[in-house]
Image (tube, rainbow, N blue to C red):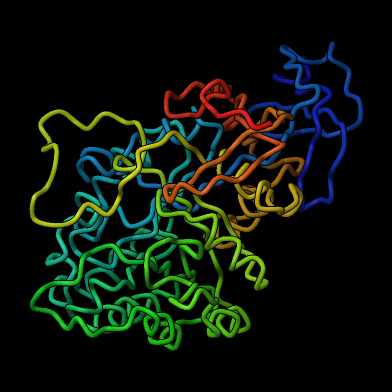
Length: 424
């Protein structure tokens, strides 16, 4: 046989090649070897019928938390939110640090079926227990030299740095931590991905006069082109929308300077904040799920505590969602599918410097391919503020190919059509 696998009659969309139509894709030895309106099925060992389905470059999740067990209840199994959710590549945001990166390489990067890379934590503690302990993220808990050396020695898997610019931290230490994080990113010449929106409560002994609406402007001046501002649609203070309900004027200035914006959906996503930002012309460059063990239906690892009593739980709202369901959310907000697909394919590939073989369907590139169901109907989508938005189009993963190998989208974290509220 000339081909191992043939995807037949699917709606193929690849923004990097201006492909948008019904085509066949042939795969051999884990590579794409042909794309054409019609390829002889007799030349393939197996044919997968994908008529009326969307066939896309393998999806890339820009905001994953997959350092499971090491990060306690926070990290999830990479393949659960990866290939078994229709996502071929995951970018872990801040799970490993310079201390734990060797374990991340061995037990995640080298052991999972999904492709996994990291934005290395700027903090020595990494993403331990999902940042439940603010005292571990103070300036004394960063080591610029050690983190730079770790990043430079592991450039094959370290594609950026992760930092947090939020009210609880600024109340404790001001901008000092962000200055150190920016220095690491400058020395490594890697993009810095910055969380915005409050994570920690303001301490009783801290400077409670900190204005959340000043955080953005304090941080943007530290950044370089290619750095990423995350969570533009957060419901927490300190994001893109100020307390007057307006987009901070420095956001457009940051975009003009070459900074990028990633949705980082998560449980703090707000339809209201998204509407304000989009109406102001703030369209994100990339789309990440930000799924983790606090905001999804994933059992906690055995032996971990049920709750922490030392700080406020900032991740309320356990739901079923995935990177693909966040694409549905963007559709419901009025974005076009052809505008959303680059956010989960070619744009994150460029953001993380993943090379030309990822995020596209070019002949000779790795056969990382996502196949989606495209449902039509009427459903209600709801955020954790209780705001509902009507959707008439809903995407769900069917399967993906990772290096030409088939993986069904059967993860138990995926939302099911039967679980969604129907709209009139």
